[in-house]
Image (cartoon, rainbow, N blue to C red; front, side):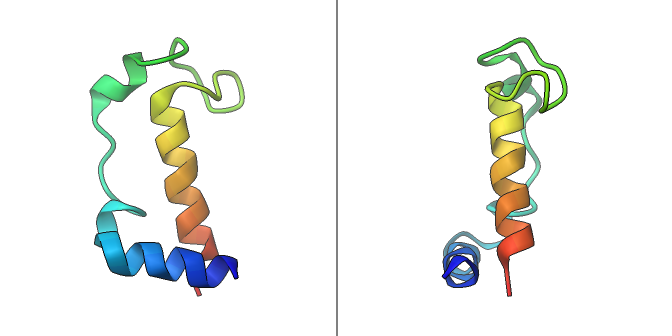
Length: 59
């Protein structure tokens, strides 16, 4: 199920959803920027985790 979802997201959005460059301004949104385990709700870290989730779930 996860593989199908990740593959579908990749087909719809291409490399932007899994490998796209994350803009630097996102590090200033939400919590103060730090590593993802210290500041999990920083926008940069949220986008990075979503990209990682999609990459690791593709079949």
